Image 1: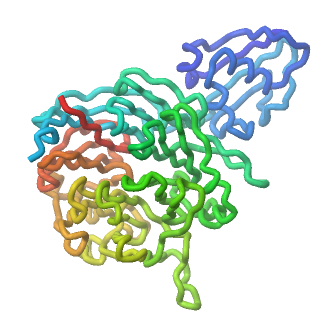
Image 2: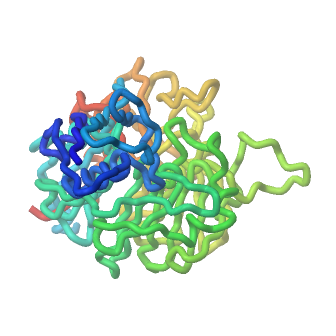
Length: 92
Length: 385
C-alpha cells in the first residue's frame, strides 16, 4: 500500500529537506504508528522528535490523516491515504 | 603563576533560545571570533565541553515544536551527531511523564571518562556511559517512591517547566552526587545515584505556611543554582529563590544564609552563582529583584555583579562598565561562567542577548556580543593554544 506523507520544515535536518514522499509499505493495513515506524526507518531520529516516550503526539506537533486532525497513533491509514505532519505553533 | 593557566585560550559556549554560538578569546583576552549559529532555531538549554577530553562537547537541544535531544561533537563543535537514545522516562506506576527538554548537562568524574549526567524538565536525572550517545534513567531517583512528593506538582516549578539542575559530581568521590530541583530542593547520593536524601536544612521556604510545630520543611525548596568547589568539595554554595547560602560539609549539614550580608536594597535573590576555581571563599552572584511580582530584573534597573572574598560574610558591588541605569537585565541560572586565568575571567549572558565579560575578576566589564538571541547558558571551554 502507498501512503503520501507531507513533512514540516522543522524536520529538515532529518529528511534532508524532503517535504513530500510516498511510502510503499509491504502490508495491507497500517496505523499512523506504522507510518511513523516507516518514517523512522527512513529518517532515523525523526520519530522521537514528534512523538514522546509514551507514544503521545508532542504538544506542538499536529498530525492529519487525510483532512482529519488526529490525536493518537492508533488511527488507521487507508491505502492511498495522506499523512501530514505540521508544526502547530509559531513562536515569538 | 601557573604558566599553562596563563596560556589557556577561552571559548565561551553559548546556548540561546534560537541556537548556539561560540565566542573565542585568545590568551590575550582579545575577541577572536564569534562562530555560529549552530542548530539555528533550536532551543539550546546547555552547551558544555568535557574537561576530561578537550574538544568533546555535548549540547541539549530542544525546539518549540520537536521533542528533546542531545547532540555530541568530537571536534569542538564543527560536526554533530545526535544521541541514538535521548533521555526518556519509563512509566512509574500509573504516572507516565515525558521529557519536555534536557535542561542540564554535567560531565562525570575524572575516573569515568565516558560518563555524563543530564537533568531534565520535568525533573529527572539521566546517565550516559558512552559519552552522551545513549541515556538511561537514574532509577534510584526517578523511580523512588518519595520522588513524587519531593518534586511536587505541576505548580511547583518555573514558568517554563520544573527542572532538575545543578548536577554535581564530587571531584573527590565519583559516587557522591548532588542535584538541585526547582522545585524540590537539594538532594545528595553517596552511592552513585542508588539512594538519595534531602540536603535542605536551614533554607527558607517563604512560599509555604510555617509548620505549626515550628519544624523545617525537609524538601519542597527552590534552589536556583548549586555549586561545589571543584577542589575543596566540602564547600557548597547555592543561590535559592529565598536567598544565598553556604554550607561547609566538614562542619555540618545546615545551610547558612550568607545573603543576609547583602545590601538590603539589593536583596539576595537571583539565579546564577559562581565559585572561584581555586579560592573557595571567592564567589559571584547576580542579584535580581524578587519583590512584588518577582520581576527577576536588576534591582532599580542598575545591573551589578556582587562578589565576596570571604565566603559571603561581606560583598562588593561590581558594576564598572555596565549601564548605569535603565538596564533591566535577567541572567538565567546557567548564564554565568568563570575561567581559570590568574586574572580571573568572569562572564555572563542576559535574556536580551548580551554577553558581558570581565578579565579582572569582575572589577570591570565589557560587552563581548550584544545582539544574540535570549541567552540560556554560558560555559567556558579552555585549552592551551
